[in-house]
Length: 317
Length: 279
Image (cartoon, rainbow over all chains, first blue to last red; front, side, top):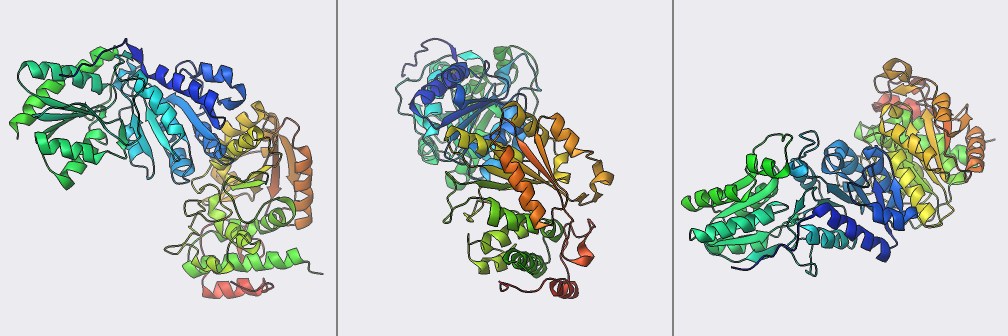
């Protein structure tokens, strides 16, 4: 099988921070806004280098979203930064009316997404944000898997005209994608070819899928792994052509099974090429305090859970 | 003697009444109350360009936060030349750019943001003002909010921000008609003295005692402009009469969100003669 080398654990939010810093140097229209979480979002470097283009709004996320919408009048490209929970659920109506319905070129950048936020617990661990954002007409939804991909995605969304939700996380996780990859919004990535099952995964579950694939190989199951970073618009073609070969699919994400990547995949397949599907996702529940990796294990978001789901889906063929 | 602007006010009131009547929906009360303001703003205060550009570089920006008074907004936008007068006849109808609440979604000239869900316009206006600052654009940003609308908490985040960040190329106008859907603002949720509140938040406050008197509106807005570019945001507290210009609609919240029937329309129109031609 292909080799995926972890070049060292890094947090995806730092990929965002580096990408934003690079944008600050290369694109004068990029403006960053933060609601009192500059350090957590790794926006310090941008703020230091571009004091006039960094707007600290304080603990006032609704106002931040409105200001971002207004900044687009005159051609600015605002990047808002706060935790995923405060980037979406807290400000849903502001995003809906002032950004999405108004077709504003705002990039909503959300760190600490999902259960791997860890010890802060369920108040901060949003597992519904992909669903909230993908339901908004015109919203592009991206969930990156490692440091390099997050940096590339951050740079790519500045050139995309339209609202974007960029979702990333807090913990340090393997950094394994190429820093020189030609990242394209809306284009899935074939990480590894296989014939018995398709594993389609996003965010922190991509590395877990790679780990699962190694375990599956040991028991004679050949898995194909597709990384879907852009959940909307979904690269339907790469998924359909894969299941035509494997006839079974497991979707894997750090999100509620309701409203997540899995449901988008399910809709695509049911209307194009129905095959059995299993869902690696949280089961309509809130999270809790714990270390990121304890939580991933407890909530069935790890490689062992993927292996079990693969066995199950193959038995349903 | 009637001036051109008096004639325009009469005609805009007719537009408002006929628009809401033809679809038996919409918000005539607040629209009528702000007619003189809109006429003065778009004829004497704002520096804007036609054809319309969404970026509005080197022109003044107007944001309507209380989007439900769309009839007066549409009428005046059309009467000053942003789009064809006949389009007013499509208000709230299917396949129209003139949605119940204003939006730029369908590229209606003159509109740069969607509003209707209350309390968001002031933040948007601040963003627009910051964009002008970054672009070294000396033009101003104006935003109109309702008074009941200030019950939305986001406004107070924005009011705090505008002072702290010295947003001094912004003029917020509050339509103080003292009414909201369920009754008077003092009964529904008393907002107290806005002058005291804005002053204590560090804003420059201008008061217009009679917001249905065009001379007072003009003088108040000129004074507000003079206070800009001095490290502080500026608010104009403009007292208006909801339903102004139609005797049975005045001084009550009852016409906030309902349309006149045929008979009521005839009476209302008889009080506002056709001056510039109906759409």
